[in-house]
Image 1 (tube, helix red, strand yellow):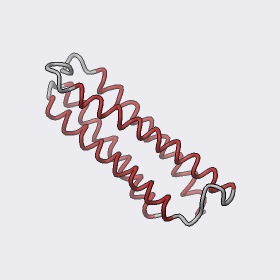
Image 2: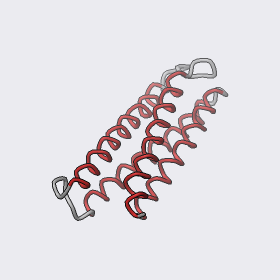
Image 3: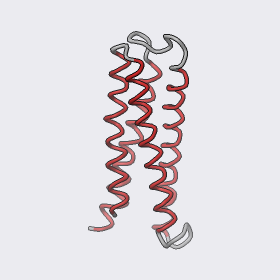
Length: 137
């Protein structure tokens, strides 16, 4: 239960961090946006690494029982969406290399990546509550 709680803290914190990146570009601070989006991407990668570590050390597989089947299905699809979010964030960072691509007027890309990232966070909070918290009660 400790690793999923740490992972939850990392993912929820990353929502605050990506928001700082979007706020930075709205102030025409491209370096700030790059910094915060880079930190968010690193936090997302750490979350995924934590998920992989958990899978490797659970002691049960996909076919063990119905719970394990649902567990892997739900967390696996969520992990896929985290990966997609990382691709979006890295895409924003890649596109930010072009001069004046994102600025205080043009910042739809970073905003959309942030909204998607928040969606992934909300879904994780629901999954964490259902899979980890309710199963120990």
